[in-house]
Each structure stands twice: as structure tokens, then as C-alpha cells.
Length: 148
Figure 1 (cartoon, rainbow, N blue to C red):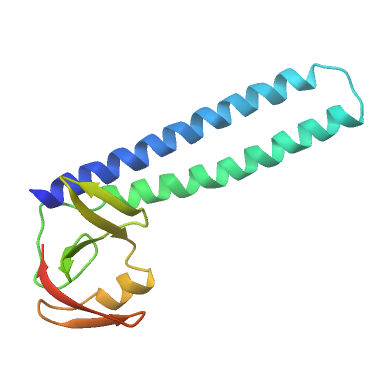
Figure 2 (figure 1 turned 45 degrees about the vertical axis):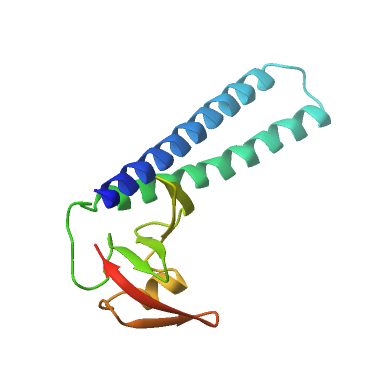
């Protein structure tokens, strides 16, 4: 049940992030349209260029967010495995690691959960490991206590 809460929380975060990026992009697009109707000149051209650069930056961020959302939606939070795989919730050294997408640290029901990609350095080392196995990372030895 805890793993499903984490999954839902991650999905909500990434969906909100994508929506906010879409809204920013729409506002910038409107700004460029309105600015292009204004007077010409060097300051005007610079302003439009800056907005277009910002649009491109937001498009890239939105693209990444949508890829993460798609990756997350491919996971079934009800599945469990006896070895660490994509979608696993790992408890190691009394911390939780959700192997899914790169979101960083979140808090669910007062517990800190690190949401990491299976391609991250720690995620990659954990992949395929079993309960009671150890993984060393940055001078820390992680003992896998449980896998959901």
C-alpha cells in the first residue's frame, strides 16, 4: 500500500510539473505574439529573441517531464519482485528508495523516500540485487532490508 501511495504522489508531482510548464509555454507564446505586433527596433528584437530562447528551454523541460510521466505510467505499483527492478521500493539503511524516475527526495506519511532512476549511479548499482545484499556508494554501504 505504501508503494502505491509513493507511485500516486510521483504521478501527481510530474503531472503538475508538466501542466505548469505547458502553462508557462502558452503564456510565452502569447507574449511573443503580442510583442510581434508592437513597434520594431533593436530592443524589440532582443525581447522577442529572449522569449523564444525561454520557450525552447521550457519545451525541452516539458519534453523531459512527459517522458518521465510516460516511464512512470508503464510501472505497476502493485507488482512485487524478489530482486530490485524498475518499479521496486527498496528499504536500505532505514531509508526508502523508489526505483522509477529521477524525482529526488519526497516525503510520504512522514517517511523520506528517494525517487531515483534505474540509470542513476545508485539505481544502477541496486538493479538486480536481492534482499540482504549490499551495495557501496560514496563510502556508504547500503544493506537491502526489503524489496517491494
